Image (cartoon, rainbow, N blue to C red; front, side):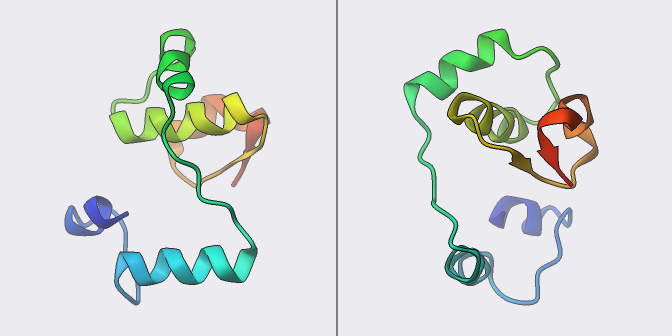
Amino acid sequence: MAIKVRLGKLKLTSRATTSVVEHVARNDFVAVSIEVRHVAALETLETHPGDPFDRLLIVQPLVLGVPIVNANASFRPYENKCIF
């Protein structure tokens, strides 16, 4: 998120770290670390968005069997697995 903010692709009302901590606590989210199995899943990803971070964000929930929560247009090929 911090990278997206610096690039002007994401607008936040507070610092990215503060925003993440607040959203995780408020929504009872669980932070997910990048694991080898997530990286391995990149080989079988059907459609590859240009952004490498987006690719990781797509494979993590697919591997974990949970929905993807994202409003990014590059996630549209995974619409049936997304919450927009």
